Length: 288
Image 1: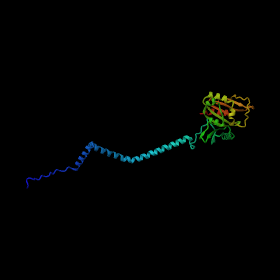
Image 2: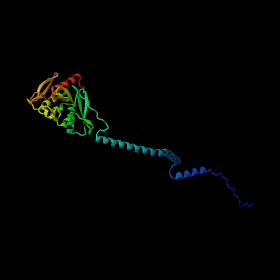
Image 3: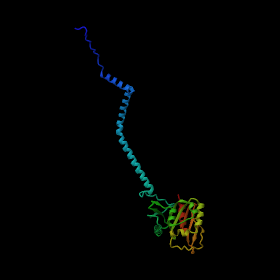
Image 4: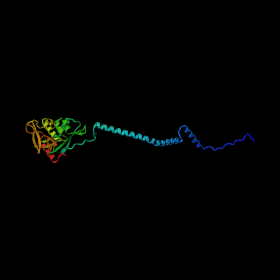
């Protein structure tokens, strides 16, 4: 052996496991990027959690969009229906409620108008006025406007027939009214019953109305009666213990008159017999 050249024994150091080399590399990378290994692990864990959360949400999200779209369509459809109903009024399929008569009626009939036409109304009114009634029968004549799907009240009929009561009377009127026809010893007679809310105003208005009451109601009265006025003034009368006022023609027959029952209900008719018949009904079965 050559003494000057000694063989240096090789170092047999155990190799580091691969995982430690990886950790070292990661640490070296992290130190270069100015953040710690713990922060890197935490960020990776957050990404896993977010991915796990987004996975089911990505499946639910389309269903949410569909639900919202359906909700918008339903709301829009309801809004369109409500707007149409507001503009056009109640649906024709919804029957209007018939107002009950103020007093008991033996029978109820209806004048049905396609539109508020005066001639059509008067023709149908006259038809009922000429109809055959049983002795002392009272029929309640309702008027229904098909175009508006509603029943007409006293003010509506006054406008239709061009009856213009004084403002004082209108101020005293109540909301209810009943127009009808009753059989008396003089034949069929029209009767108009109107609720009174303010007696003093209504009565003052009636006194003013006397001057043209006959002319206003002429289209609704019996056509075979002479309207040639006698004294041309209404005279006080008493009917069934109630004060009344009547206008008579030159032969002494009543043309038109009125009485207020219990200061609550005005009765306009063509004779004491008709007014008396209505008062008897009211006395037996008081109006509700």
